[in-house]
Length: 373
Image (cartoon, rainbow, N blue to C red):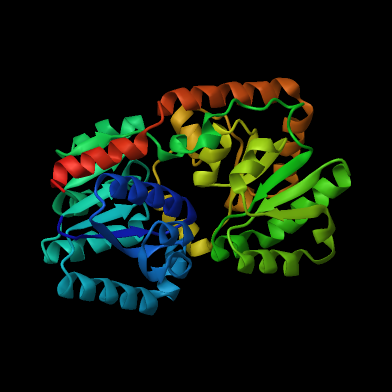
């Protein structure tokens, strides 16, 4: 009988929960003797994770928000270190979530635990201050965007491009629906984290009002990740809730809606890969924004614009994220078929850039081979 091996795995947001769960399932298909412990959400729990902290507890965003929760994060790191110290952990797998995971790699190395980082920190956006942490503490780096291999290979020996795991999901293999085939719905995505939704509440409420006034034809659909977020939005929207429907399957909403208004993040990539023309927005605390503006060295914020290297998606950030401007851009998408088709054509290019499906399998083969599991 094969010896049981313990893998400590961490994801810190809903998209990471999906990708980590697929990775766990594929690893266990190849090595049934693997036991998983760590931090994740419901998807990872269903895939067999022994959860020490739920994803919702650590899923904060922004420098200001982290500062407010320092005591809790200290407790979480101490809990992880206690497990590293007292249990035999054969491998740490970090999935995205760099603010937390990069620090965790330092703790793992204190106990000589091998480290794999899957879905690399976006240091090409945030600058190279953290590159030494990766150099010292990460044994194998698995990247999901083609240009990342060239970037990280300047600093690390063991970097592999495996493709993007979104393409492993069946829904991303379907052809784009054109304007006429799509439902008369507008996807409105304020974020999956409570703190993001709080920053966007006023904006969302005004957008709902503007869309209502524009046409009774369109229903507004807000995908939500948990019941708490649904209650938060319902309470704030009040009477305006009549024209809003809540759904838990965000990908199906993106696949079938006519257009979208979507906060910056992974949901931008999901929308693009599902052929949904959309407008991007993002607001955060003043402190977080001021710090980020000094650190980020990119012309664009949306990953779609970054990958396509152009201004394909309208971006409205911080003080420019005004509901009237966002709505005007949304209205153009709905009324101008040429704009609509141009956006969808650019999204076909996005699919080609990211390559073929099979990222999860490639990631697992790299992990098994490199760490000799």
